[in-house]
Image 1 (cartoon, rainbow, N blue to C red):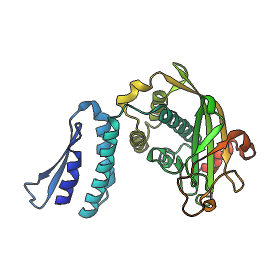
Image 2 (tube, rainbow, N blue to C red):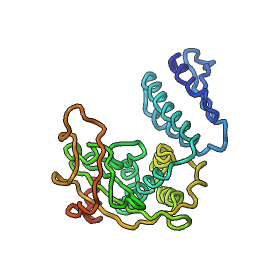
Image 3 (cartoon, helix red, strand yellow):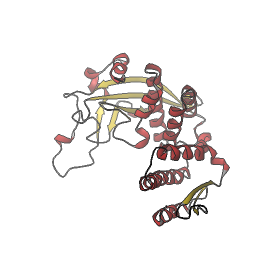
Image 4 (spheres, one colour):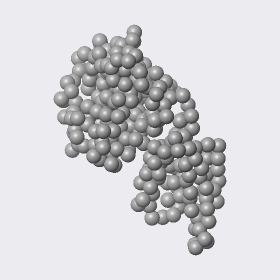
Length: 283
């Protein structure tokens, strides 16, 4: 490995829980070892996921330059995750959003029992344009609660743009949020992990995506008491005449478009759940 790698791993020096070192290979002096050490056993679950992820990313790489590139990309990604872990858990809004995505993911798995397909389509943890994506479809999940149950916030002009993805579905979950009542975030995570226990690949990818979403076991006590119930569920098929703002409608020089949809004004575009999952079946 090159000196470039040595420079890159120095960015981990500030972290207390992980240590990365470059060591010489005494038998092959032209080569080096990359040593990844866990310094805090409290984070063994995250470290396990990190190691599995690193191995998966480079297992089939044959060229050393490409291997180094992939290692650095993954290590940088994980460095950012470890920094995020030092924060005080997910915000209330982020908890609700994650619950909504996981609630849909569970339904997805129940209706289309192909774990790898379902889990790999979940992109919300990666902050993609839509929460679930595949080649020719996308699903965006919106959760509301309290006084703003009837207003959906659309975060960009691309989110509902069917010129980019031919089939887009918008799902709205109106949540009842109460202390010590309903399903907790921890409960739905545990339920999904159990559902995926028979598929090691999907199980591991799901664990990685939870970490990317900012859900860490160390923060579980923060989520023990807040429960969620679905008050109302709406599914919309986005069509040309669905009320929306798209990229083609925006004048040159305008960006960062955000807008709101009123739920009651969109009833003409509702779709039942059976038809939704028929559209999401893998070809």
